[in-house]
Length: 625
Image 1 (cartoon, rainbow, N blue to C red):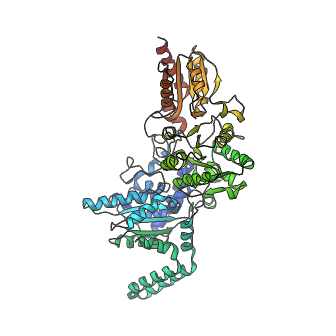
Image 2: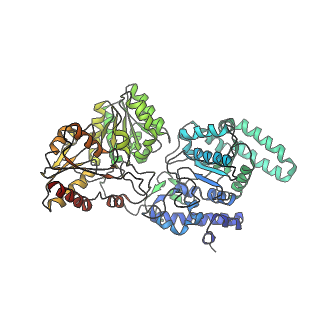
Image 3: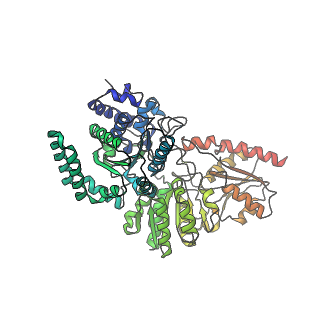
């Protein structure tokens, strides 16, 4: 008989013993594999956190007790246990469940997450609010060991240890974030994780205590002394921050987890850290063997692990093309180095790291550090390239201004996953980067229209020797260029076709949409000039003046309307004394975009030819009237 079918809310878990809960975990694991195989999503991280989540909800009283999931990559079991099991087939789909915790989706989701390293800060805020308001509930922050590479974690730990608020931090230690973890903290956790002497002593101590119950108090003190001597790294780190340390705990043993959480709840006037050891991808062989590949997956065949939709032979994505260009140009320029913030595969840095391992640096989930370290390298004559997702680069905003652009240092930012990203929703959309980069002095912004243009963009950026951001989406795009690749960006904007009525100035991959829109408008008798605005900043004034020969100028971008390319064009027209030019700014709205496919969002926002053409035609009629 299925236990999972009888679980409607976390309190239902308390009807079952630990053996039955272990059976439930296997049912949940099978359910997650089945669900994600249909919808795509974060697989390996969720498979590793099943027992941990069941034990948490069996031990605490959510939603009265607050559980804050760092990032949210491991929150699927939480969703299943909190009344959303029947909607898991809508995961990450338009109008369906988010792939991350969202308070507007469930009272059990206490805080919206999606970026790493935020959970302890948020949880500490909740704990202090509880104390000030005279309330009584537990606050639990759950984060992976990869998040410990983020500076926000250390800021929060330092602050939490300085006070007396009750707070429980659960470290889900699977020795793997998206890519293998790096850094001293990881090595310290690893020493604690594998020390056979300590683990053997722990088993012996437990047996002796079970034989002679009166020894509990003495043995607790004895275990602490031995742990301190054998594992001075992680043990002393948390103790020196005034955290009460519990662990390591087998993260796939329900009984041990519940015991640890029971102990944690009894600690007063001191924050607690529960160190849990789990296996990422547990229960699905393909994910166990390659957790990085199965971190985030499209829909796939359960039997083979293969994606249901395979890329066409010869298709290249922007990140892949960046990786190829890095390798090629690094052979020509010994100054070129690459830096990644824990995502070498997704950003194309892996290919470079294989070819030039001494010149590739993975700094972990630490975008701020990555950018400032790049500035330090550039200050000493190197040419660092730092590919980071647009949504994560937001975290390094101050470093871009203060450490890179203020000193006019030759750091090249690869703004990956720019524009509308899709299924991961609000926290991952890249629609803000033109707005937050454009106004920074000394910054140049490039936006190649197709993967074939990546080498030209990188070569041009290296030649400039000043701060450059190369903005590109996660996938690919059809080829649109007419100019030879080597001279693309030297030429500024490229006029892809001539026209007399409307000039469409398109940023990046929107150039393809503009060309297709122009075809539809031509059928209505409207002649369109189409420009690929590859050089987003500085503005190509000569090309803009030429575009003004058309009675109507339209800008087209997948950045937010406010502060985007269209705004910059409007300002430039005013500066050129051409405020009289009829201008239509077409962009994403000033809004957070929920989860749906990129194609769905382009359609909903009217950024597809079938909707662009009527809009432009209507404006054209107004201008001509």
